Image 1 (tube, helix red, strand yellow):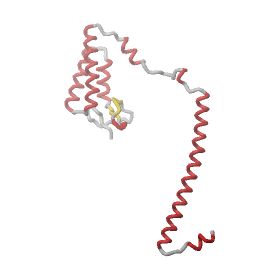
Image 2 (cartoon, helix red, strand yellow):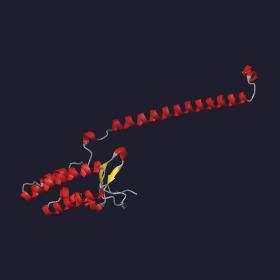
Image 3 (cartoon, one colour):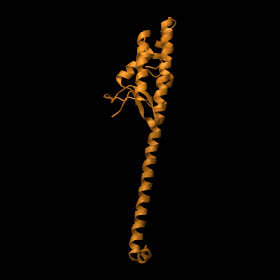
Image 4 (cartoon, helix red, strand yellow):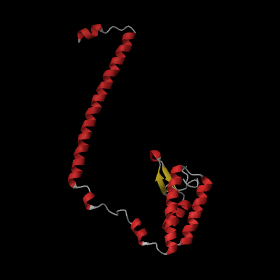
Length: 171
């Protein structure tokens, strides 16, 4: 069962929030509580809420000793959240920056990056060529396997004293 990378609690959900991907594609997942604390720390609008979330994150990290990568990622997030909280307390933080960060992704693939009909046709032709090549290659491998099998059988029979010289003279 998967565990939260921050607090080591067993995760109930299969679609748990992702902190990062580790080596060999191993995800570092978060429980709902830790994900909510990170969201509050990085996206909250109230100084006291952010401060409380940062303190709770620090306690969790100190109590559960996460791996080095998780520690570094969370430390960077907490440092950025602390700077953001100070700017909010001073009244100098521009909340429109949060909207820009949240809207970075595309809802739709841009026109110039979409696959054209020509690309689709080329992919289909390439796939057809690969199927033909695979079929030919499979026949070659099957033939080589049969030949190797016959060779091994003949050698085994020869080791038991069966004489194939007359058979090969006929052929």
